[in-house]
Image 1 (cartoon, rainbow, N blue to C red):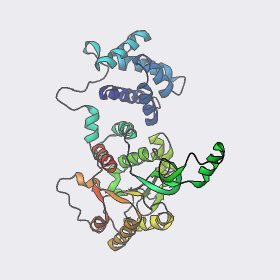
Image 2 (cartoon, rainbow, N blue to C red; image 1 turned 90 degrees about the horizontal axis):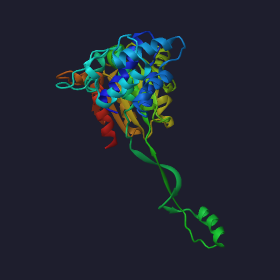
Image 3 (cartoon, helix red, strand yellow; image 1 turned 180 degrees about the vertical axis):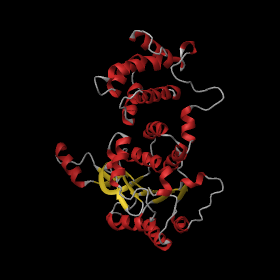
Length: 361
């Protein structure tokens, strides 16, 4: 599927929202995914199945579908004509005759809308752009390195598995004709997100939470926490499929949202309650914060030392790096930086994609 066609599919979901239909971000994601597996002639029915939940909305859906894909603005047409129009859009990425129900994006001298969205800062995105961002986030994959576990499994090489070899020998009259080997299991390292939702991070919090939502759904062992003045575990809240519902649920569970920033105390709470219990041991820790800590920097430095001894890798995403001439001079950031393995920005999708590639390298 081309990016231009994907942009059209996302725009259709936004158009239905504009017409008053209760279309969530998760529904738009399902519509785009389903549309990628069918032909253009099935877009109408795919949209009916994924975007319409109430019988009275079908009429509005039909009119919106007709206007958006054909540009007829309510003129009498048959559904066959509409579907043929959609096929034309899918084939050449444009509308026949140059007519459209929406403003078209320039494609000659500008980057595509999706490319602009990747480069745009979370702090400058509108609510509709954040909804489109959620779909792009769902396509982002973190290539996390594997580690050897203590458990062993049947393997092509390794140590002899005497018990299985003897059992197998019963098939050949007691002769160990087939030898069985076992080796340690390989398992992806756990990823833990610790997200700053204090008032100083309010412009970036939603974009980074969408990132954590998309990532944690890739592996049930991955965890997510939020903090402002205290730590809150939000893994179960982010388990919902719809990003809007997941973030709303997380916001209700985090009672100190948009409060002050106590990074050191929050990390100490994480390590005392979860880290030394095995959650952080050998894991990749992703901290998303601007480092503007109002607590004691010595506490933060001590907790970062503890975290560095437990974790496989500590990544710190500071969105303030998008500012020209930024220097990590804040007391909290200066105390934490010596114990960070990777210091990146994370202020837009492009920087998160670069982080995903770095983890897999």
